Length: 585
Image 1 (cartoon, rainbow, N blue to C red):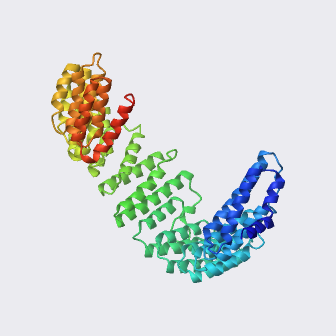
Image 2: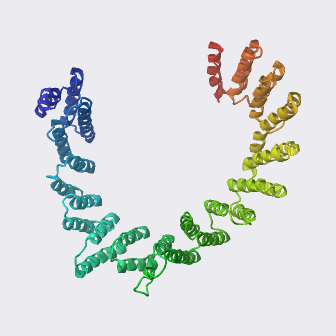
């Protein structure tokens, strides 16, 4: 078997080809020969598999790439590799794979791509025919065949025949319908009669698609295709009429209609002429009229389809229109504001729409009542979405910026009552505000916050102890810590903060510095190995190393069984090198 393989490798002359180019050294050539032998043995074995062929092809393609790179590096003139034994080998492997594993579409696709890249066009058409014989149950094969005929053979007639054959087998394939619809409309006739025939064929295809495919998004796609081609007004109107009859309850239909108005593609079933084509209007008047018609369609839509989705499509479109305020700024803003007000009243706006509303007002610098209007919109937003913390934060920041202290307190109380345990960011805003404006009331705010939900209290306690140190000194901070540390809910971060504070004092008091570690291990020592490791670290560096053994004994006795091994591992590292501290979380 090995001799047979060697003979096959010699037949393809790959090694001779590589040797003659002097691009690889002896070791590399030996390695290449080894790989070629291995791959040949696999594809010649009785248990052939697809992956062996794929790996072999991948290796050959990589080898071809390496040859090209070596040539470039050595400055060798790049000649065509079409006659390269490597390429011939890859071609042969693909050919065999499509025969042995003809049910796997991957090989057909990859083989066609390979030959197309090398411009080996001579037998691709025949290959496609074979592929279709095997895979006619797959719509994409008919599409591949048609696109090949169009792009490479410039034979649109044959492409149409392939697509029609595919449709007979797959009457619900969206891709087949869209491709043949596009192809037919792309055909341009030199006479009116030829154009009429083209449009009639496109109409037939569309009607079949509408009959077999009940998907509004797809029908809209066909409308978009028709819109991109000239002389398709009647066809477009036909599609729109069907959409309104069959899918008038779908938001996408109304969004499409409105955006067509904005583009000047007005639909009027009672008129032949498109009133968007009037030529005596100025550009600004035309744009104003288009926006008005677009808005009217959306207004009709939100009255018929009272959903958040419909409102979102409406507001999204107006948001896009208001991106450019270089023309008709007041008109665009007015329509946008009115829609936002209506959407809020209908309770259908999303949070992003309120942010658009806020931004719209902030950009209107000429409005003397801007501050009051902003507050009104922020109230609308928090009323509609009371659990959106970002909107509450924006409202409080606004009230700070306009110095509305009493209103700030009122809104803060309302927000914290609504948000409950999630209100921590609002407490932080309040603290920063009062630290800047009313420092004498900061402690009162801390006291109130530490009585709130555990999620809030646990965050404010360490912040408060730090504030006490900075404003009242270490002695009062120690006294405050002693009181806070024993009040539920217990707070690990409080102990960590106090431990850090003690270690930055000019004269470290071991007894005071040890207390936070004692409290941390007492309250959290059953499940948290970190508090014990931190305690040991403290005694080694700043306290009494002789206490380490006792702390170790207490830790093993206190920790739940599942955490003991983790602690012992960390402790052993510390014992091995006292300067190496591992902190576990």
